[in-house]
Length: 213
Image (cartoon, rainbow, N blue to C red; front, side):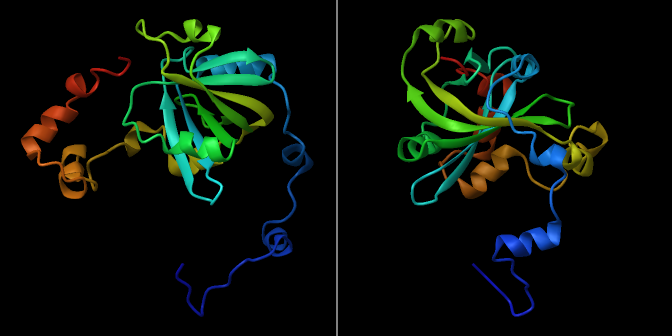
């Protein structure tokens, strides 16, 4: 990791607290251990989350997960939720991490909302269970499910979204600086495919085929 003589590094908790200050009691004490009705409502409304994992050696992964709202999360009980795995690139980086280290962090988003619901807990991978029948999307059962035993959950404030303007359509210009996906793939993911072939591959009507089976 690069360092320079002019950097002032924080290396202790005391230094961090001296810089940031102590959290307000409302923020410090807001974590809970069981789902409330409002949490269930949030999970039923979210179509997207990020699953963060780490291997025993510290190799980290943050993986996006998405399904239609109401079908992303299966609430097993007030202490347990499950996420479906759908067809993907088969790297399974996060799942390999879970097999080594079950601790996970999840952040659940609702489009247009700045606040998010965060859940931390211990995860396990399940290849089949009766609740899989309740996680059908377009007639397809999950390939597997990540079952999370909740250790803490809380709502996170909207300041990051306010600063970023993430949901403001006036800030949306996805190809203004970064080239389209086909060009990125051609430049950094050699496949032997031409730009024309990659454009066709990533065309939404083509790329969306096989999302569930």
